[in-house]
Image 1: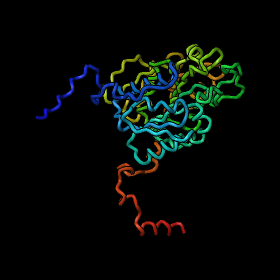
Image 2: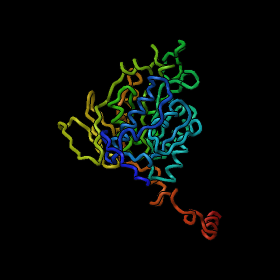
Image 3: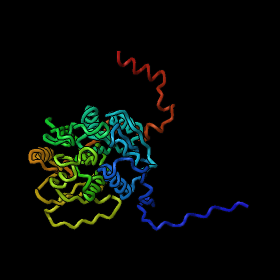
Image 4: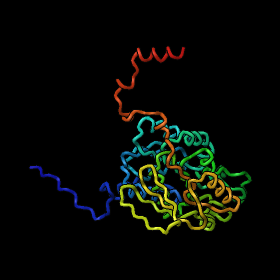
Length: 350
């Protein structure tokens, strides 16, 4: 006679609030170059999603084309995913969130995918405040086409072959702040502690959350003279603050001396604590954010941390006044207009 399958032995690995281990947030094995900064970002994103108790099957992960756009395959293997056309990931993200606003959208892009062919789509995603965590894995080169300068390469940065970049870079963080993005942060793939906290805060933000991560290309842009190398980033990294993030589902205990920290309440009730290090920085001051970014550019410093945050902005789906039930789940009889309703609409345009 058949016997029942014995229950699995209890795991000794720690679990999160959903009872899931960190391994259950993994994806496929990475095929990127050994030491690539993109893999460090993937590892921190896995850790952030696990610690935040994100439900993998509720995540829609999207990307365009490029080395960075391969990375969604390497995390959250149980989630939905799509590679869009080069630079067109924001359109796919917009459509997905309109169809099902209950999803958590994570978009991964590169400096070429975002700041060159996709810059128009990037601007309109921000203008509409589509609820998506938008990660730019920024290495300053086109890795798939053998290391030409990208639009984020700094003036004077050297190619592996010795050529110097002569064009002004596009600063995606400055552009995002100018366009009204409600959450703008920059980090370095080699700073695991800061990057983890930034990603956790971004996951809790309801709206477009831009995280620009300097992520050195170990094959084409990690040499002497590159401003996107590990060595240069470590030497010029200037953090605005120490970041502590307390998710809403945990008991909130904060012990900071008066005046030593800036508290920001995120959309979901989570607390973002910014402990000042070098300056009295207010992350809700848009003009100060732009000044700090520009000063960092002039002084050749990599300014990292949460540059700007506005937790009160309405996101795209709220402006559309969508019904409570996700559009993707509505039956066809509720989404197809009757002839009378269509005639009424057409009559209104006469």
